[in-house]
Image 1: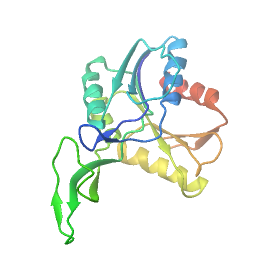
Image 2 (image 1 turned 90 degrees about the horizontal axis):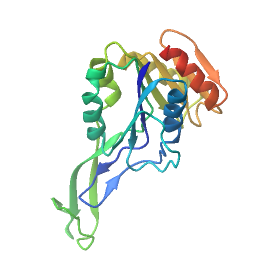
Image 3 (image 1 turned 120 degrees about the vertical axis):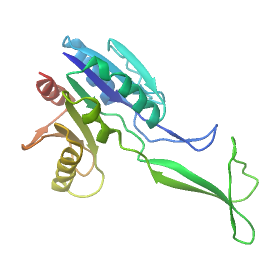
Image 4 (image 1 turned 45 degrees about the vertical axis):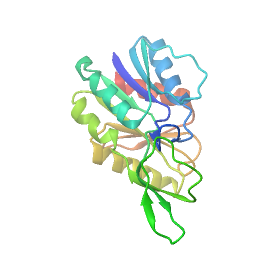
Length: 215
């Protein structure tokens, strides 16, 4: 079977030398890609360039993406391959930079446009705007594929994290959602569209369950 796995962090540029990113290492997605490859599936791994994972990818092909927009472009170029499944585990940026301002002594704001924002002009204010959601585009790009998203939740209860996973499935027309993080608790939840949440104690059990979705 043919599948795509996304893994690791995207980043958004503040200027030509600074960027906003997250703590994702890309380890889980890389391990999933290696698991699928070891099971005989043809895997395309798209992994964030800032991934700190030291595991060597075993996918048939591996690409390194930078920003969310770059990941989006690379995924769209894979539409012609008609994958059987897309496992979207990448930590795509929730925010991108909008306008940047400096504050003058009189309190007035002046917009800054510079390849390298100076630190000598006093405080700098950066606007964060919501970044486009790649997961919301996947059904249009891959209409026949099994689509699996991820939901990493830190706040709320176990049941609330599952409810947010169900919202992700409903809003994006995906087939399943992997839920983990402090709100969910130890292990992983695999929520299938229209079904119950299957609790999986560790990554090995999670990968087995994800392969069943692919098959």
